[in-house]
Image (cartoon, rainbow, N blue to C red; front, side, top):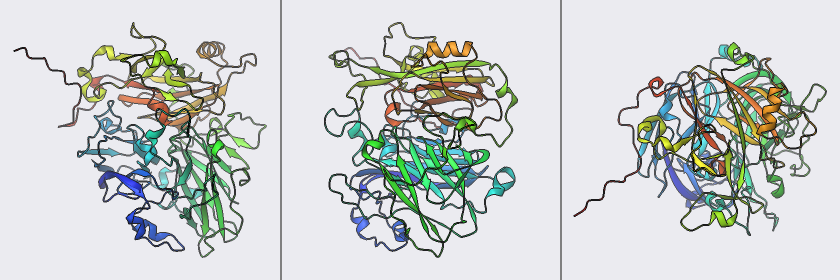
Length: 607
């Protein structure tokens, strides 16, 4: 299948871009003035207008759409996307989140890892064959994702290959639920951040498929923009595909009035079905669930609530689940943030505390894989074991603002100036892509926990890279040394899905804060919880606050793969690293005419 092209543009407020380009537009501009709303709101999808939540601001769009055009293909389809960059003074790459890029490593879309950024006025052609499941795409450059550059990907497979296909009657293109957080200003206004006015990086609003309404907390005024409506027919069963495209640190909670959600997949990987009433997800996660249209014909509320830091602003959004031939609006009053829909059984509770005696929650670690698992993954000892503690480094102002120094930092909501560290290293991009220009990079650019530059201090900055033998079984233990209440970091691995072997907190009640030393001791004593009975596969998973996760995968996809926290503002301050699987000899050849980049420092002629 060929997707003609994506055009990226900048726009003033909420509008859409023309024929598959990336542009900049603005909400409620002239394009919106030619649109006439009606009861079904269908006309809005046929005009060049992006409404978002009705608050005017500058945005970035793909083909004048937020979200960008949905990519709907079949397993084994060849997908070709031309990305044209028309954003004034900006560069961009597009990452295809959840697509493994086996044999197409050069199209993973990570700047200075798999490609050079696409400059303004240039076109880059991505080509890949997708693995089945619910995925999405987004800019992997700067903060552009938060300003509107994202969209859904669905790679469908024959029912005979889906172990849960008997549970639903329809898998419609209209039943994608892409949830996102939304600022009322450019994301760059929050980076590095402010000390006095509108501090922190939490969003003012959130959207469902780019739609929503906003109530001004100061005036009480509410915009009258349309809500997203999902239509179902009585007596039928429908597969919904929920994608969390949040960029901030807020978890997202979705509840559908009067309906049970049967979870059948996560991050594109099938699981044995479980029934829940509420799903909590983090940035980058996807959950597929089945809705049975077995309730009285009518319209029902869908409530999306931002948790954690989003609770301060009471960030929420509503959508509608509507039965065909029924009313367009629910008869019940709209749920509020504080008086919301009943939560019932919660998928992925924030406390990550689940056991057999608890009947109000199901943790990710309790999900069971619906497919066979590589037996090597379940061996007692992996080939490679990697401990990765992560935390923030807090600058003292006098060391950050020394003359002729320009270190990155983020102004946290507390006012602290911080960078991110994984294994005491803050990731710094190389000057050229490792995948295609490895020999052009100074070897001193690279580092890891066992190979730190001699001049590295407490805030060591370099290109954090860990080498992994091809086909090794790798175990990664992530340890949250941030230990900030209400903050759990989701980590995403490019190029793979991994088995979730363990999630937990320290069983030692005398230890109030976990760290690397304590995690190593727990592992030595066999007290890091591991579960080998059909562990689920994912590519994005949150580390519990003051806890740990244990992941395993077989390193059978050679390449340079980014592994990072999926919170956008944490990415830009260094919470990333690269896993190099195999050697250069294991990679496919660099595509002909592949763009190059790097320093230009010619000798100075002496006359």
